[in-house]
Length: 248
Length: 261
Image (tube, rainbow over all chains, first blue to last red):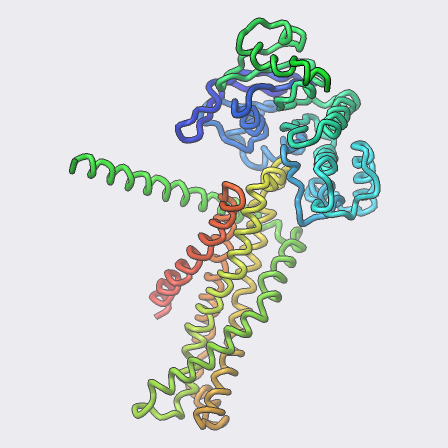
């Protein structure tokens, strides 16, 4: 279980998170939505301990991610999978090395087993026979899939997706959404998706968290969000209800 | 007017001190974290060997050129200063001791700061701005262990070896100039080198190199880890790494000289 209590974070004069309280139970599929710059990605990076809060705390499986010792945080991170917005593949490594790095560094050295796992995880994201290719030779959509395979390699208990479809064309975005939807159902991992893409959200999330001005403005099921008459939420959703976007 | 100027100046100074303390704290934390993984070096030997090849073997051609020309120039320089005052029979000793104690370690370190320190800062800086370091952490891999430690240890090991190589090449360069242009026979040159040779000179030079190597790699890693702002940020990190490393090499040189003599 993930528990966030009164989380505050500022960058210089800019206060990005202004007291976030949130609880994510095991098995939840949560979408964190909101306008660009409202602190969605910052919140996600606090959950996995990549950022330190100014005040407040993030507790993952009983471990406080801002005060725990680095080795304890490493243990927790072995249970997490993270898909980065820009894929963040290691550009000096092949696809196989990218997918297996986490496993290798935590003690698995059997090359046959590593190759088998890579093949299995790549197949899970719809890729075949690209183990020896370098990230620079992959398209944006393929990079996202390889990054997803890398995040899945350790069979994580929690999966975090940071803007999974940003920068992709509508068809590739749709494919990635389909993949995440399938994986969420198949792996039964607790999933947290940060996005401002309502198509992704409507397809995958069972629970929506809407951030506005650094606070949780709405927390509930998608149907309730859609029915909301709150002017801020209505304004955010309006764009996705326009005839052009509905036709997508 | 004057009061507001004073307040602004104090404010700026305060900001500068705060940034310096924050950066020093970050650097100390990185060093502490890297040091806490030293027991894992045997397990991570592949990372270490890769860095040793990059820092050491790949730097040999450059160190050769620098060493050779440094040796040549120092022989000419010594001859110019000796003229009419000191016999040329002592030129070999003067040049070799200058090379072993000062020129070999310092010039090699500054060249390595340009080649290796800057490349470490650029590589790690690029990893920082493209979220690859965050990706490492998300895979429960400590950047201090995976990125910092192998580079610092490799530089500490390879810098003295590069300095030994540079010393030998520089001595060769000095000999060629002495023999071909200054009419100093081989016998006279090497007898002079041998007569005043002290193992202590070599050892002090190598101890200096060890510190220079560690400082260069550490600064490259630290600056790279704190890069921000895309391609421009990486460029700035590269320049900053070279400037800081070069300054640190000279500061350490003075401090070590004071300790040894």
